[in-house]
Image 1 (tube, rainbow, N blue to C red):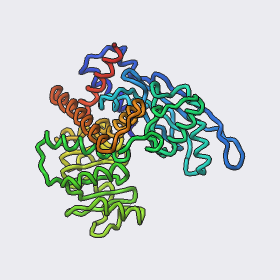
Image 2 (cartoon, rainbow, N blue to C red):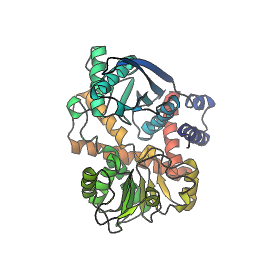
Image 3 (cartoon, rainbow, N blue to C red):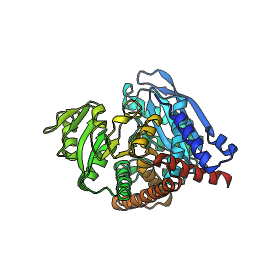
Length: 407
């Protein structure tokens, strides 16, 4: 398993070398500014009190308030939240948002809790963290096993503790609680905007084929928008396995099948394919939208796509990067490709702070403009430095962060 923080440090040092950064800046970007460890009591349905452990890593706030999700998972640990908060620092800077990077988590298996226990856990976590978050300090959001309902519970508890109305203290809320229109589609749609711009630069013309590993929310929205735009979706998969049809699949119909049966497999007119084999298909565009480290040194040489669009977090290992590079495969790094989610979180925050709320088409138009600008900045840097898009993204991000730190 590749250590995500080690990957971050490697990219940091490579960018620092290109930018000739002061060692003092590098040292500050190698550690979180603050790590909050929490132990908080929660009353269970049986009347017993259980102590839960949680974290909030606030990595860097040179560009603005810390920003990043809260996850509820039994594998949450200190090093993981630090690594993810470092990566959020880069992602927000790549998207040119006025945010730094943060990440939080609670060690818990939420499936073992009742709805009432989950609500009390959410309230207790944010209550204990209340002095360390706020719309101008640290703005959490949903992540693994957390959702708009949990955000609504947290916001209500925070406002009760602080005795203020502050909808901008977290994002990813239900629309009825001050959330933004279009948040559900945002990550997949943002990925599509980036893909569209890249294909213009590569002069790749339709019809083009796409294989997507991971048919969750992000994979579905990318597939749906791309299909409507004339791309041929030839393969889709979920945790149970995948389906392949060289003549193309209809994402909306596949989604209906998945909702009925629990998986994309056995979809009529398709051939069953493994998740591993999906990655090796001869397609124009490959989209890993599920798990980390799926393209690694053992299979990178077998990748036949012209473009890899990373919609999952860290789906390509540093070893695989080098192999894809040598093969001339263009890969769009996760920090750019999947930044549509955090960009729409920023739009939600702006709406909360201004008190103006936009309809979905307005949100999508603003998202499109922001994603196009982020792509162009990184494309130009990659041409200027003669490096791949991942290195260019880190150079652009660290340049922005270090400039703000020096100021």
